[in-house]
Amino acid sequence: MASKRPDSHQCCAVFSCIAFPPLGIFALVHSILTYRAWSKGKYGDAFDHSRQAYSFAWWAIAIFLAFVAYRVFIDGPGWEIFNVFNW
Image (cartoon, rainbow, N blue to C red; front, side, top):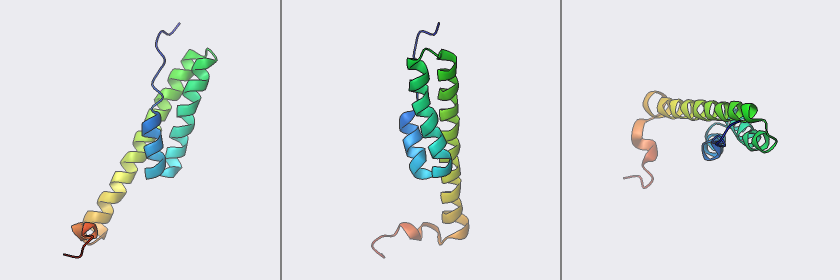
């Protein structure tokens, strides 16, 4: 029997849902399923969902950061997009 509830990575899942929704939604679903599986006594499933939520969330964040880096350094005008006051 497991002694400690696995981390659901819910905060990371919510951020990844904002950053890159296609994978972020999967992270959020697995985050919620972590709690449900733990409360039903399915400890192995809870740990599996925790691991999947973590993986989906960080892949979503990595894709988001890669997209931002591409837009800033390769495709876009560089750091000028952050110049809000046109200085």
